[in-house]
Each structure stands twice: as structure tokens, then as C-alpha cells.
Image (cartoon, rainbow, N blue to C red):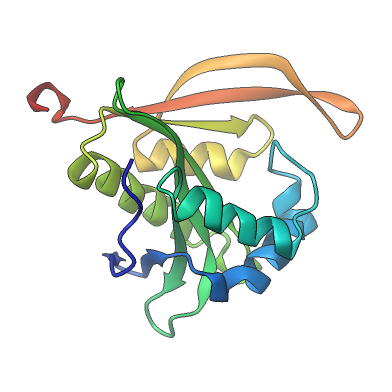
Length: 183
């Protein structure tokens, strides 16, 4: 996959998505290490500044990940991040990940809007056929957000992951490009 254009802005009603950059590093490290974010991630290893910069250099800048920062329209405040990764060019699909790092963004439809903008980008600009997402079943906010954004539950894996000393259920979601027959 080609790297994300650095000038690309995806505009929504209350938020916009802009490409992540090195200047976001301290904020993203803070978000990713926050207990409210970590509890909903599958990979829970603490994120260092060096690891994030390595991610930017070796994943984002090389086009293996298309990552955006979610920003509020009214004051440009960064609220979280949404990304596509694990691109499969032959199958025209990718996996979405999303998190809100600022508690003031919770419960306002911001995640849903960001997920919809990302699907629109994936389908209209990248011309992907499918976008998948993995969600921990206990994360009801993320389950609802993905459903509102247009994802459909495709699989429910009981006791799939061993996290924090116990087994957790995992839901696989998928969204199909409604125009994919024309691709």
C-alpha cells in the first residue's frame, strides 16, 4: 500500500481526521498508556516514545499503516486515533483500529463518526472491498460504535484471549464496500 498522503484531511460534522505525525508522539504515548485505553486493547505492552517513533518510521511512513489523529472541529483538539493496518492487497481488505484518548470525547458519537470517515476513506479512496475490526466483547461502547458505523458481527470467539489473568471473549466485525462489485 502507498503511504498516506500527509496533506489528506477527512472532514466530518464534529471532527476531522488528519495524518498522524512525529509531533503527536508524546500525546499518543500518553493515550496508549492510559488505563482507560489499555483495558480495551488486545496488545497491552506499555508504549514507549522510541517504540512509537519506530512505528511511525517503519509502519506509517512506509504505507503499512494508514493512521489518523481524530481532532475536534471547533478547536482542533486531538481526541484519539483511528488507523488501517494489515492490508491484504490481493483480497482488498484491511483491519481498522480506533481509540479515544481524551475522556471528554466519550459518549458523544465521536468514535462512530471517526469510524464512518475511515470506512468512507477505505472504500472510496483506497477502494478496499472489506474492513475488519476486532473488539473485546466486554467493550460495549466499541461494539455499539462499530455497529452504528456500519460493521456487522461476523464471529464471536469465546475465551479467545488471556488478558490480565483471565480469558476474554473477542468479536470480529466486518464492513463490506457497497460498491465493491464495481471495483
